[in-house]
Length: 113
Image (cartoon, rainbow, N blue to C red):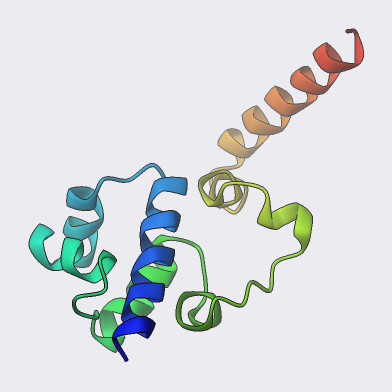
C-alpha cells in the first residue's frame, strides 16, 4: 500500500507544480497542515477521500489519474499545464478573451520567424 501512497504523492506534487502552488498554498486550500501535505506528497500518509475529491477540483484532475495514473485527457490537452486549462474554463469571459488574444499574438510572432 505504501507504493500506492508514494505514487499518489508524486502525482500530487507534479500537479501542484504545474499549477504553480506551494505546499503551503495547497495545504491552505485543503484546510490541512503543511506537514500533512508534505507527508502526503512523500507517500508517508494519504489524504482522506473528502480531501482527495477537493484536491482533484483544485488541481483540475480526476481520481483515475490521481489514484491509478491513468490520464484520460487527449495528448494535446495533457501537454498543456492545468492552470492554463483552468483559465480557459473560467467563467470570466474577459479573462478568456484576453488569453485567446495572447495566444493568437504568440502564433503570429512564431509564424513571422
